[in-house]
Image 1: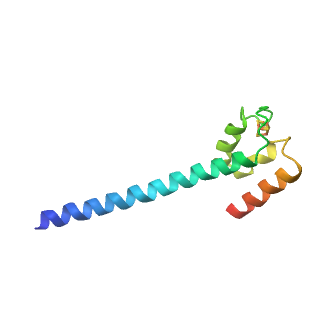
Image 2 (image 1 turned 90 degrees about the horizontal axis):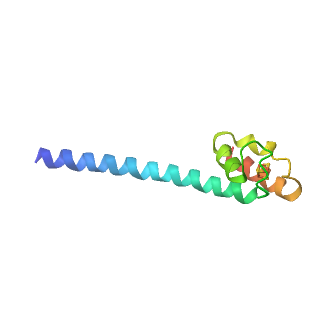
Image 3 (image 1 turned 90 degrees about the vertical axis):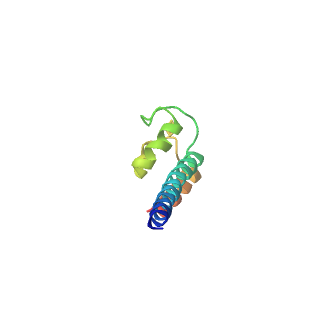
Length: 88
Ligand code: SF4
């Protein structure tokens, strides 16, 4: 009886950890996609991250990195600033 209880509790704890980990990973992926949508997409590399994909990945660590993107101007820049502000 106690063995069943221990196995059930262990499964419940591991299941909870898996769900929370998945939620965190998916949130990170979603943010990366959202950053990428708001970048110019020129892949010029002048930001130092090699491509817009590289920049989007860098923004997961340093959300202010988009400021190194010189081609990001006007309406796109405004969209990025508004999106970043919501995440703060
Ligand atoms: S500078 Fe901007 S447009 Fe150029 S690769 Fe970096 S993020 Fe993309």
